Picture 1 (tube, rainbow, N blue to C red):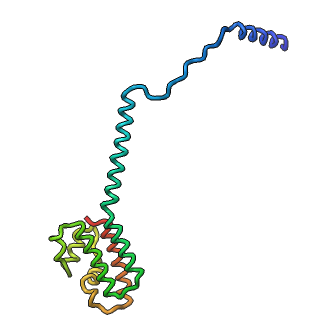
Picture 2 (picture 1 turned 90 degrees about the vertical axis):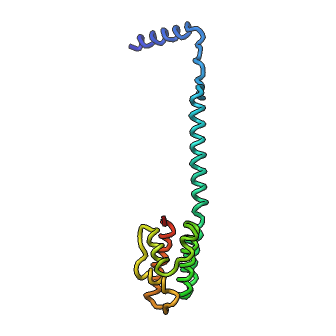
Amino acid sequence: MPQDSLQFLKDSTQLASEVLDFIPPEKVDLSPTGPGWYILGGIAVLLVLIVSIREYNRYLNSTYKRVANKDLDKIINQKLSLQESVFQVNTTLKRVALTSYDRDQVAHLSGEEWVTFLNKHWKNNFSDKESDLLINGAYMKPSADHDETLTQLIQSSKKWIKSHV
């Protein structure tokens, strides 16, 4: 057996020496050569640009929502009186509504009409306690029940700001 493998090795060495110069294959060009690839690349870049511009515009158009949410957070952190807190919440909601809707439609609203407007432009509704606080909060005496309702009102106001239509 070892004799056979030596003979095989000799034959393969002889064959390898008999082979003339080995010509390597040409390098494969990996860049796209057809014009269709350039068109497809251009379309992809254009789509990315369009989506980026839309998202940036959406970000800019929702600035008023971010500012209003920060204002509502300040109301919680400032520990204002009930009357002052309700006034601030109403003012913030009115600013958002004036930004989103026609001034003639929003500016004159107060009391029941105001709460009806808010509920009409939201998939949910403010609860009866929250509505009462929005309407009469400036005239109510503070109590523990009102503090809890105020917290709920602020949370509902944030939801209204986020998803009003």
